[in-house]
Image 1 (cartoon, rainbow, N blue to C red):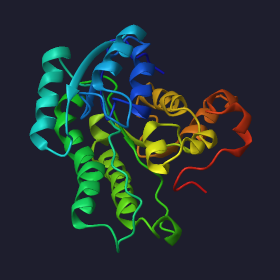
Image 2: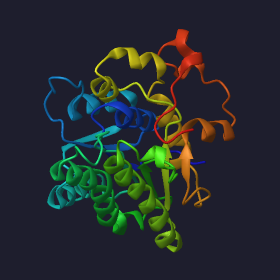
Image 3: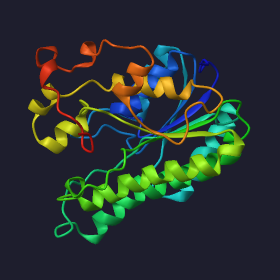
Length: 276
């Protein structure tokens, strides 16, 4: 295990939710956090901005660079990498956390929505990884972490939301491919997925009610698992699709009750999509 003190970490989609939780977790080690997200100004329905996350990162003990980035556009990713190098001098860890969700069937998903899913969930992680690669090679413990699920081709994980599943499985396939391609360059590449649904503003927005939050865990369980991954040295973990709870158990953690959003519903947690 290593410390993240002085490490430069790019996190896409870090204005709220899991991305924000990771930014704050890593900042407690004294890391340099690049908060890359679209939300520069308050959203009418989703709390959190890149500037609010930056303030919390600084209070936690890290350095912050807030960048408004739309990962659909290559030129914006290029500008993000350039600004990161100017501010911090390199890139040690890339977290591809930004994502688009649309749990709709093929019949009712228009081409524009399909393209959005593929652009954010597949093309963006591909491009960010490619553009960060020259600088990750120079790090002494480089990591790429994709927030994507284990691949199970059972029809139940496709029915009703094939476009979304295709995009997220493709992201995991990139994990497998990059871990093989970057193996000799010392870069660890993994995917991480939560075992249960996670209490985020996006979950509440999609569900249309805050009742779903009672069946969820806090984002901190994912950030704690991510910390375990990116502080692992010598590519001891690479090419894997990891589940937050399972990984933490392997690291000797057996108390998960404090992660529950609603302690009185700790025995009613709902598994996330793609988790049996």
